[in-house]
Length: 275
Image (cartoon, rainbow, N blue to C red; front, side, top):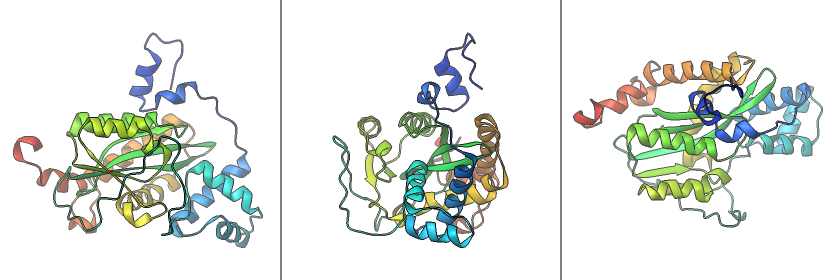
């Protein structure tokens, strides 16, 4: 993990460990073991019932013998970065200076790699604490192009992942995200516009607009995260790295005619690019 006495600069250590730079200077507030247990269960319930808001989640928890209040559940959901997913009028306003871009993928036929990339963030529970995972995904092949872990939800770790994806794979025509503050920030949208990439954003609370990334999170949680109890960020990073490599290279997808994301990705690239 990070060694503040090492000759290697902290920024370089964070890069090698695939951690965001902002996490080096963040002083975490401890979360009780009881709250962590409830948050882990909320995470699982949210995957199974993405339409459930704080009231329904409170009642589902009470049905399992966990007595808690709606406000407490709502506060945990905010900390985890999740909300009930359903179509509704967009009455919320973006943060000052944050522009919301239109959704560009409705009715679009995605026929090749790097036509559309998508990105999202998800909550990852550990044995004592939690981290956030961000991933850049090729929409056509489902291939994970870059990912990062962070102990905060600042924009830095998202920027790091996008910069790596651009450096390794070129640039997409369209980049799709939700309306999270990280993705509407000037730093994030500026990176995309500087590279000539069209920006697309989901309708607020509309899970169908980014359904492929939602399916990725479900696979990551049920096939990796919920089977583990990571003792440290380093262990989480190493174990998730192994799983995501398996996901890309070995895990067949029924939607890809039983091919892996890598097979689907490289089979449709121009020969000189794939080489």
